[in-house]
Image (cartoon, rainbow, N blue to C red; front, top):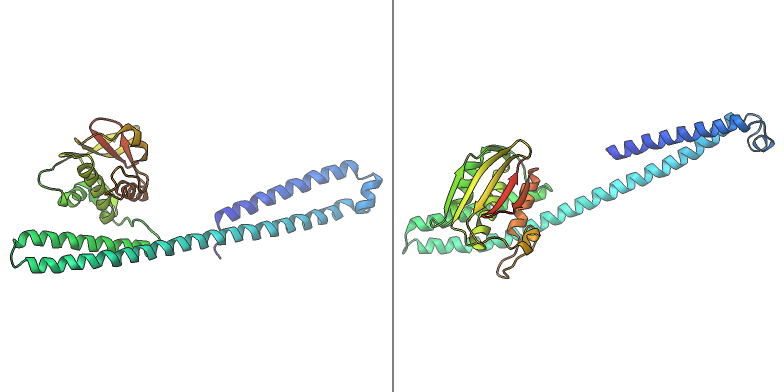
Length: 284
């Protein structure tokens, strides 16, 4: 069994405590060893007998304490495994349900190709394939108990290009001075897509600006601004809560998912209280 650093630290602390107790008692013995009470309790060889007693007591306490720590470690590992299994099961279930709908849409596209512009249908098919890839990626990570797997170094410009490919042509997206980042490309694209779509669907934004920002005090960041309706002050602290929404037609999961994906990269997603509405991905 792999020993946790917490267990090792606890053993060292307990050993140090036992040494201190023994040393303290021996000092008392040296001071009182001529008294009748100590002779009656420990005999003439007071120091030797007392050390044996203290050693037995300390070892007993140590044994029970270590057993308790190992049990707690085991319970924690079992709980983590249960949650990982639950996450994996949920991901597989959702994937099955969504894939069923996607296959129906693909079938309809094949039928529509006979009467409509093939280019438009090809775009639809491409986006469906992207959704299928995202589902497969999510299942793989869920099976491993992960949210992201950082494997690529890319310029954030590429993430923007992929994330905004579904944005209507009437929406203007501009970029400026974007950095190169180590990331899970698929999941980070999903996060940015959620932020952008939130601005369009809820804020009615028509212009979105995504730029890199560098600050000596706060470090590098990616700033996402839009000209949509400002977020009301009364709900600003809740927008990243899972399930929070002001529109019953939506799930309230978009920004929550984006925040978790960004956090899994070791970054932070926050709302900058300014006009225009601005989200900040702090990279350090």
